[in-house]
Image (tube, one colour):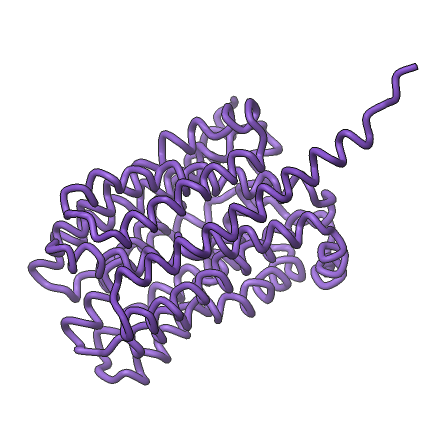
Amino acid sequence: MNTQVKRNIRNLQAFYLLAFFGVGSLYPLLSVYLSEVEKLNGYQIGTILSVGPIVMIFFQPLWGIMSDMTNAPVKVLTLTTAMAGIFGLGFLFLNHYLLFLIIAILISVFQSAMIPVSDSISLKYTSKVKYNYGNVRLFGSLGFGVAVFIMGRLSDWSAEVIFWGFFIALSLAAIMAMRLPKEQATEKNKLFSGMKDLFKIRKFVIFLAVTFMIFGPNLANNFYFSLFVEDRGGTYTGIGIAFLIAVLSEIPFMRAAGKWINKFGLLQIAAFAGTVSMIRWFFYFMEPSLSVVYASAVVQGVSLGLFIPAGLQYIREITPVNITATAVTVYSAIGNGLGNWFSTFLGGVLYEEFSIYVVYLFFAVLALIGVVLCFWLIKEETKSHLINLPIKN
């Protein structure tokens, strides 16, 4: 690996570290802030937290179009990252439910570009230089975990610090984004035609459903886990410790994902990760003690640490090369957008009507459906493989 490649890899890793530090500063503790400081009810919190994912469903493809039209994804990523951080400060200067809702929408409009555009740049570059994507993406998990731990401790002093953390981290991430490798698209204006081709691929559509059911609850957990830990008797610092354990546990599994995928298969690893998620959510429904919650948080490494690289690689494998970027955009919109919104919004309703434990039962049911679909895909691929085997005379 030459010096320029090493520098580009380090820049990608630094961007993920800072961008996810910003996200980890805000969202895991935002629900507690809105509940304790602003005194909003479950419906209001659920709406504010879930509006972001639904906005992402529409804006992620639009940012993809802009990246393709301008053939400048790095510039798009720089602008959107900076704007998301700036709007995050809006929570500090406003004090009304509807205004909070508007701020959440504005943040999401720009933040919706961060994951798919950076993933597209990273996937293209790591594939080009034959570097393990998981070794880049794990810095996002590191940044997220460290942010929740630090902000959890600082929030015991002042809850408003989470918004400053979000702004500063994303401002630095925007500066780092300008240094990312200029991996431009080979073709322009192919997004809509690409979408049409994508939805003709049966395996792609089914795996979108798998992602919706498994990945959606995992993202929604970032909002509700703090309420869960608090209900079990945890403090802001305790919430930070729990998130730190959960998120940092993703790192070794992301590093090992490549070897496990080669040994067992992409869908098999995705199904295993989904099963672990399902068991975790059902376990939380059983109201375990706080010490056990801390100990069990490490299983997030198995679920997300394996599902994220396996899912992205599967999408790359089943879609034509000329529409891979489009596939990543749609995949992100379904998992980070629609699945996240559905799980977060209904989670808010269930939290208000019942309890935080019923929210996790709901997550467990969704994960179960996702695992069943994943095993169905495995069965279909096995059947297809057997049909295509050459006949021996």
